[in-house]
Length: 489
Image (cartoon, rainbow, N blue to C red; front, side, top):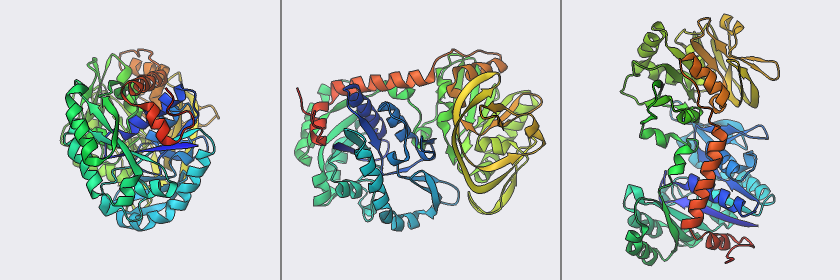
């Protein structure tokens, strides 16, 4: 069984997309492919078929492989929360809460469990595409590493290094990585890929050869800027560091970027709607006064993010929007914030405490140790939807008598205010339903375009796969991976 690992010269060099694209390209060749990331850090996560959670990127990569997401695809997941700690997820389940220093000392002990998942995946497919995290050049983090070279050497997986030419300095980034690695780690790297190139690749021919000379590694190709990436689900918070409006429609939908925002890919389907302008509001900016709908997104630490929301003055904007008859939708943590109180007496998401909510829904939330992880389907606003729940805490109160949704198992879910203008739900992925988007936009005086979000993502994966086949030596990559069919003409 074959395997290949993509590592990067830094974060956000495009490893996740390249792995997804190669997964789809190899799947299109008729191979059984599965993705793997030993350790991820992200508050964007997805529920798996075996009832756990993994990083959103690995769920997308599973889709690229035409496979169901499974906890073995991302055995260790860190979800940053309040007070500089992270929730530790192992094999899809909460293992505890760790500080940065504690994780550095503990992570090596997780390698056997990582390798267990790795071996199970290898037995299920022809080739495993592995994604590293951050960069192996961070040699200060090398001791106990399980995300990059620590895993690659333990599992004996060849590595290809990805450099991002768009950010500049790619020659130094690749050659410099070769310089700082120790001999055994450097021996695991067999080549490099140049990613995010704008313009004519022929202009970089000399630079490409210089990297080969300086590093001693062969190049596998130059990948152009992949415009189809914009149609993929958002993977992590790096994308929010460059906030911008999406679309130019007459219905403005605004979402404040909270410090611990999670699962913000919930909003991605709105980018398909021609009538919608989606505005991600960064800190320091007010929520636009002409907004038709404010969405409060998920949060890894609801009380801490509620305090941050107030510190930004966004609570004033939200309450003024409500007084003027504007619509508000809270998802997961955002739903909790719309209630009267959030209580965390045992400190599951940060220091123990209780906070007053925005008071727009007549419910209260109490956070607890049990984490709800399940796929759901049902009906809301008169439209069908599918999605998943991923939260801790129970929300209840007089307002719950008017539910937002009815699930197919008969459970009433979420809350809608008597005015119909304030809604809250624990269901992630609601907006992937074209019918539900249409129903929601109708409430704002518009209409949905009917685009199928899943089909859009699938088509984007095929487009990316086609471009990688054109610009990378995929046959050589397969041969490197040890795939029996690799290297064929």
